[in-house]
Amino acid sequence: MPTVRFMPFDRTIECAGDEPILSTVLSRGFFLRYGCKHGGCGTCKVLVTDGDVEDTGSSFALSHAERSAGWALVCSSRPLSDCVIDISAMDLSEEDFLAGDQVEAFETVVERVTDLTPTIRGVTLRLVNPPTMRFTAGQFVNVEVPGTDNVRAFSMANAPSVNSEIELIVRLFPGGQFSEYLKHAVKGQMVRVFGPVGSLRMRLSYRRILMIAGGSGMAPLLSMLTDLSQKEDRRPVTVFFGARTCDELYYIDRLKELCGLAAQSEFVPVVEHAGEAWEGERGLVTEAIARRMSSLRGYDAYLCGPPPMVDAARELVVQLGVREANVHFDAFVPTGTVGLSARAG
Ligand code: FES
Image (cartoon, rainbow, N blue to C red; front, side):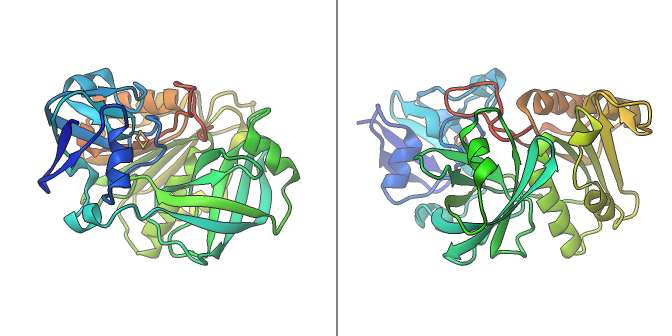
């Protein structure tokens, strides 16, 4: 059986060649960061420094260039030989690695479902057992669709300071299992969630912050913005929020207020198909950024939304001067549907 040596902790684990490395590591009582577990989110990215693995994850979560440079997704990789894997990018302490999987199952109940737009719902779940969840702004949970074994990933939109509820932003998909459930969801119904998962989080730095969201992708960024304001972190933030039509924008007042707290901060809604009355930016969110920002040197960028938007925004912000290492993003590819987003709208 091939062995995998995990650096920098220098621990070697036997990993069957027919099982994803992540599953083996978790079942042996160790921990690696993960999110979707099916090669769609990029959370479990590691650097293979010796040996070979076969990685079947999506090319969105890991580009061909990254794969050629030795990066792999442990949730969808099997070892083809003895390997050495550097997990430094996961930013785990040795204690975290040795502590095993800390992701928990939570029983929650539906507190409210509100219409944010014709196609986006705000869903608040109250935690029952355990009654609180510790998470970092930017993380997400896997929500079990009631009556099925299937889960859907949604980021928390609330800040971690509110730890007895989780607030989700859900785009409705015609015929989607969770969308159908929400049509009839009533207060008090039990919903199981698993989490928290994901590695998107605000990095401490002296740089200015650029946030770019599309559709329901505003959720993790809203959590981070609220967290920043509660911690009185006054780094300048520029938030671009893209929508196809004016009625697809939501939480505008909340976002304006959060962006108004720090000097030189700005909130820029961008509408692709706007009526004549719209006085704001028009077109794609990337077009608005290109018009308004001549240089993004000295910025950290946080992107969340549909994969094509995140892809285009990643390319643009790097062209405008953001270092690759300072671009952080969150986009999801659902099981068996490479190229589409499960939760970003
Ligand atoms: Fe591996 Fe999502 S957990 S890509």
